[in-house]
Length: 337
Image (tube, rainbow, N blue to C red):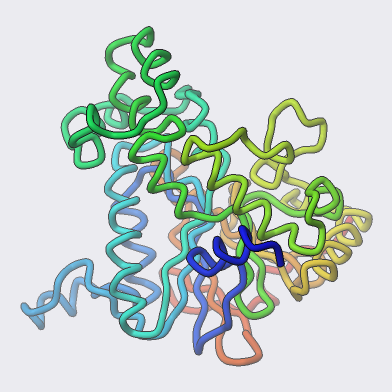
């Protein structure tokens, strides 16, 4: 492995060993209340009953022991509590690692849109969050935000400037997002916001370590140290891993499923977990269980279902956690068309 990738993955691993439990949660879109609800259902933070019965518990105390939680991106946009979600993920990660677990947040298309100054889906409260609660913006004048970013922000509408200064590459919140990966593999389960295919991997020069390179190049972009990776660039005719929906169609085609299996073989995984495309009936699996679609439209913007996926033990056996209990994968299997 090239030295720069070795150093990067040592700090921000692309591949992790499985622990006793792995949990995946879909797009949060600025809805802290809905996100907390799913965390409670998964037993990762205290339930309301636990908080009532034990006053020593903190409402955001990690209860998952060695569980690894992966949130598949789109923390931003469509809701008013985006920054609170980012800080909660960071807070839980610190606690989880002390217990042998981890909290891994991925980047979705909305994080990258914001880093490119695309604020089309930001709510009024989302802009306000960056003016009223400015932890990331403290000392911004003394920071190393690139001069071209400061110049571009200065000509933006006043109400957008705080957010832009925080989120454009090199900004303090962009630096927080730079700690997130595009793709991660835990045991034999891969996670990405939209999807992954052979063409994505071939688009990267260090093909043997394509996932590691993609994560590294995206991190450098968010830190203000390089361009957005070509595989994520909107000018690339290949739909990027954060925008891809091929495996999330109501009934994927046989060719989509074959393409998925080819990608899984190349990255050494047995199944893929994706968000990005809301599933009206809750979490579903397709392509013979090779892909789990876990964007349930969780936030109030969509009014979807509070659900998450879990994989248990060395075999990483899956089940769906709903408001009324666990559901077998077979109950949510979607046939190919």
